[in-house]
Structure formats: structure tokens, C-alpha cells
Amino acid sequence: MVDEIFAATGLTSGGNAEPIAVGEPGIFVTPGTVLDYLNEVNALYTSTDLAIKSQTTFGPAGGAPPSAPASAPLVLLASWEVKLREWKKFFDDHQGFFDRLSGGVADTTERFERDCVEFRAQFERVGISMAGAPYAPNRKPPDVGDTLLAGSLSVGVAFAATAAILLLLKK
Image 1 (cartoon, rainbow, N blue to C red):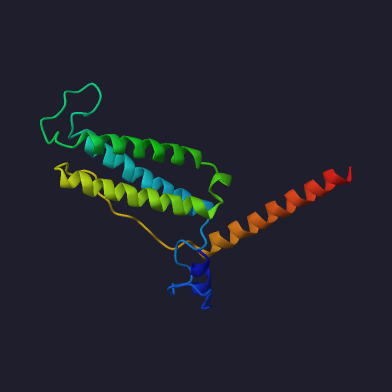
Image 2: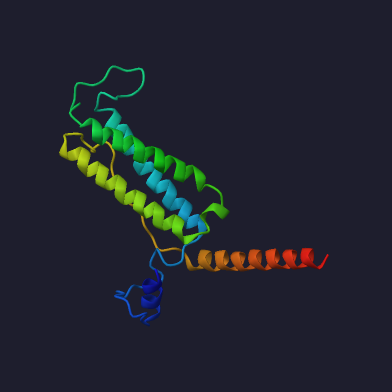
């Protein structure tokens, strides 16, 4: 991350930083941008899970399993269920504004997205079609106004918290 920041400024930290465009997603993001990203990746997980469950013996609850490829290895299906549970917990834990202030949330969401895309490829290789679960990321750079607003809010919250602590210590 340090190399990315230096690359954006045109400086070098001594690492192998590749120059990147200033304003490229991933450097400064707002909690609203992170929420949009979380929702996008959640839609990816949901559609992928529905595609898998509609074509395996672990089909939709209450329905007879389809006769289409039930050949997905049990290890792959079990691994998917574990990853899906991890994603749902992470997604649920980061719904609040303050839960998304850390830059690590966007980075972790990106890792979950890559994992889901890899699972989709693995399922395709064993005959589970993802045609009903399209994957079309909708990325756009964060709005500068949102970034400035979030930065101002963060500074304001930090200032208010510091002032409150100092007042409590004086008493």
C-alpha cells in the first residue's frame, strides 16, 4: 500500500511500485464507495450460490435435486459453503458507516471477490454452468467530493473525540 501511495505522488519508497493514476480506486475510498463494492460482491456470491445449488444434489431446499451435473466433487462443494459463510459474516459485520472506515475492508472485499471468481472457474471446469449468474463488475473511480467529505468527517470525528477525552481527563 505504501508503494501505491508513493507511486501516486510520483515519488518512490525504494520498492517496486508501478505508477498508477491518481484517483484510481484503491487509494482513497469512502465508506459509501466501500458499501457499493460490498453490495456488488455480495450479489456475485448470491448469484454464484444459486447457480451452484440449482445444478447439484444440494439443490434448492424443498425441491428434488436436478439431474444436471451433480458431479461437482464434495470437497469443492464443502469448500464453497465454507467460503460463502466467511463472506456472509464479513458482509454482515461491515454494514455500518464506521465499520467501513478502514482501508482494509476494501482490500479484504477484493480478496473475497477474487476467491469467488476462482470458485466459479472451478465449478465451470466440473460442468456447473455459471451462465445464469453473470459476472460484470461495475467499477468507477471514487468521486473526489465524496473523498473530501469523508476526509473532513474523519478529521472532525477525530478532533471531537480528542477534545472529549481531554475534557474528561481534566475532571
